[in-house]
Image (cartoon, rainbow, N blue to C red; front, side):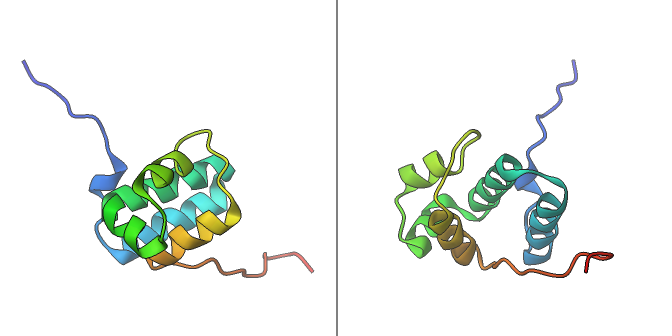
Length: 97
């Protein structure tokens, strides 16, 4: 009998380019909860211990802040993004003046 494995996005977040593409896609087409989950996925792919150390946050608080339904403070998101090696930028929306 053949078994199938469960899809895990973290298996594919193996380069800075792939991580950036994934997060930008979520920023463009997802919502707040999608983004929190996506940042959590990236943190897991890189390693929660490493992200905790670089962000100054504890591993338990990272898991809590980056779970579905969580409402982390913006400062937490910014610390995690910086630890991930990313940043938020704003670009003009086409057709908007």
